Length: 605
Ligand code: 9MR
Image 1 (cartoon, rainbow, N blue to C red):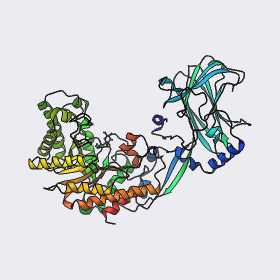
Image 2 (cartoon, rainbow, N blue to C red):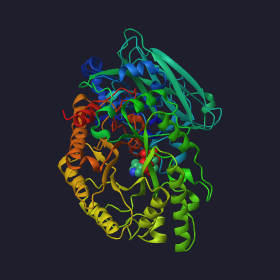
Image 3 (tube, helix red, strand yellow):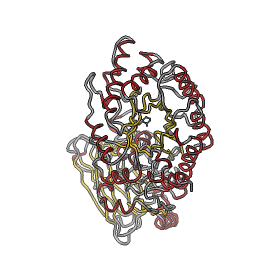
Image 4 (tube, protein in one colour):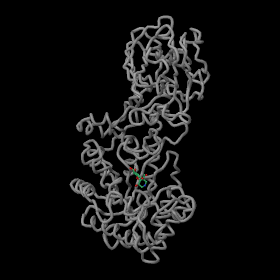
């Protein structure tokens, strides 16, 4: 629930351990039930960890000085993880049925006023639901005798109150929408019998969704709170008001002790100076190592090669037909050369991240070949002038997963303007044009899933062998290696070997290494990168690097590149909208045990 609103700041995950049995809004709990629940909750906030999520690390990161980073990167073994604990279950009404007048964890009262209060669904009233599928509708007819006549109250876990610790600070947020001039009074108070108020915000409505945000400091003896909203105000007669996305949170800190990380510099451990690469943002990105000092420190300390994660793709380099835009890429190459780093170009051709004009280009096969050759030649020759650009992904992802057919070659094989308009020979045309323009660069075919998908790998190998038989220039195959935490190292080793054994021998490169750990349903919460999981990550990285070194002879090693610096940078977070830990650095840039796993494999430990 509420994923859109919270994804950057705090992914609030719904409590799952609370049970769904509290369908009634009545305060039926006996005092002994309440007190046992309170003592267990208060004793261990962490036991509510299914509602835990991480605080934005990018914000925290900017406040970390580069000297603090430098001193922490060689041996951090613990990580203090700030977590937000959500205490208002069903604050978005998501676990209640549309039409319900007794949503779980809520008490709805009219007390002498007249009102119709019910859960509504986005399917019927999209603009009256703030996020998710549900909200609460309060249609007020007469307001009754006192200010609390018409009242909706979040009554906490199983309607027993929200457990709190005395003398602490909590963040209360909610969203409300109603006609301009109507009013809703959000309060925080203790349960019966005292009903003592702790905080309040009287909100005059505007006609649009408005956020209510209240910082609540509990009194020393407080153990339980409720969140009543009062609607019995003269301005509300005849009004319909919507409320949604209630949240009552406390920030806690969990500290894990991870296995030690002692590696000073990954690159210095590389056998035979095999490239150890990292994909980086550039241009005006806040996480570009050109301007982001913590990332710059890590990149230059541990890596010997860069791949532009995005800015050397066609959409960036030729945004308008015939007009090439090399500024950001040139600045990245300048940075690489100033720091003694090599660059692996990514990517001359792809079906994805191509400019709109190219996607929509209409022309004959020859005209499409012109478009292809112009792009590949112009880009490859521009960078051939730079000594640091040693290799290229010439064609990316031309095969699809099922059966290893060409992408776009049949229904359900995805789409590729290149395949559709030119046919399979677009691949060799790209390699020929790249070789003519950059004769000294190693030219790779790059794809994903090839570390486990045998039919797809077989198709790639067959293509390479066909190219070799017909003297089409190709120097290597890139395994992207976007693996899951349960990847099978034996299969990875076998697949790397199949390419290493091609004769004449070609290079083998791991081009986009990362590990997706949060692939389970329901998803893991943000504090689930436990020491055990970090060691699982470390063991997998060690296994992959060892397998590579074992089956790829030194002269065929194109190197190993990891697809990003800190976890928060990774495409995996943005794609799946759930926390993950796929890279080698925590968001405060301290190293993870996985980095040590890489180092141990490189140094044969
Ligand atoms: O990491 C890249 C991400 O920032 C982009 O939004 C995305 C666009 O599709 O591309 C990501 O990088 C991809 C790479 O270029 C090719 N292999 C798969 C990578 C992850 O999607």
